[in-house]
Structure formats: C-alpha cells, structure tokens
Amino acid sequence: MFARLAKSILTLFGWRLEAPPPELNQYVLIAAPHTSNWDFPLMILCAMAFRIKIRWLGKKSLFDPPFGWLMQAMGGLPVRRSGGHSQVDSIRQVFADNPKLIVAVPPEGTRDHTAHWRSGFYHIAHGANVPIVGSYLDYSQKRAGFGDPLYPTGNISADMDVLRSLYAPMHGKYPEKSGAIKLREEMESDTGSD
Image (cartoon, rainbow, N blue to C red; front, side, top):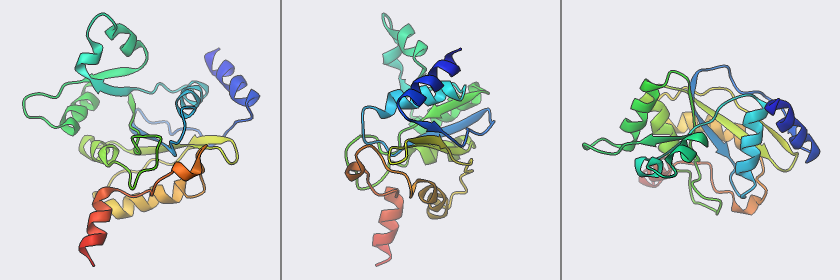
C-alpha cells in the first residue's frame, strides 16, 4: 500500500523510477547530488516505492527520552562513541549486530557547495566489509534510481572512479551547489605528487 502511494506521489510530480536497488541485506547507501531540502523527502518516497528500509546514524543522546522513540521510528540508529573507539569502529559493530541494514550516509554532508566529498561512507563500508550503493535524484530528467554495488578495495581513486562514472550525468536541483566527486585523500595525494 505505501509503495503504491509513494509511486503515485512521485509520478504526480513527474518523477520516473529506474534502476532498482540491489537485493542485498547490508550496504552503505550514498545519496547524491545533495543540493536541496527536497532531496530528503524524495529519497524517503523512493525508498518506500522500492520497498527498502533506510536507516541513519545519530549520536546516542538523540535517542534518550522523551523523544528517543521518535528518532528510532524515523529510522535512526544510535551510535556509541566511547572507550577510544572511532565512529567507523562503532558503525562496524552496528553492521555486525544487524544482519539486515541499509545505512544512508550523505557524502557531501551539506546542501552547499563543497570542495570534496567526506570519506566517512567509504571507510564505514570498507571497515564493515559491506558494499557501497550509490542512489541518485537527477533533477534534469526527473529520474531516481540506484547504481551497482561497489565493494571497496582500498584503492580509493579506482573505487571513486566508479562512483564518478555513476554520478557524472546527474544534476541536483541546484547544480551550482554540487562539488567535486572527490575525497580529501585523493586531493591530498594529487597535491603530494606535484
């Protein structure tokens, strides 16, 4: 019922669904380009239409009473950062504890222009030994879909080339706000090679 309703709403607004998500139990989902407040509700509608449950990560205090139940109902997962563990280690444990888990991690981290993507999504997937799946909202053609799973190899530039190829033809609502599809580690290695 919810899937049909979500598809109807997307169709009403002129959006076309293509390239369904992979049938995998676990992956890190990235959504790009991210240039507008409309991206979040559209992503939720697409997830409903494709019948997938997307989760997001938040610090544990967000899930304390009185509104913790609401955060969990909205797909939130608490992440503990204690005992000297990094966030990547904490999220690796979340994947280990949840055999069915799709976690959305925004690579741009903001709707404004950025010089590079944040690399958290990559290190989370690599550390948890799960694939990265790119999802897109292409406002230029009003199409939404998913790329093929990318299993991180540790060769950041080669893996990012796959993501650059997926996102090259995609345009956000405000294309001028889109930044380079490049991680800081790549930019630092480019600078170091000069």
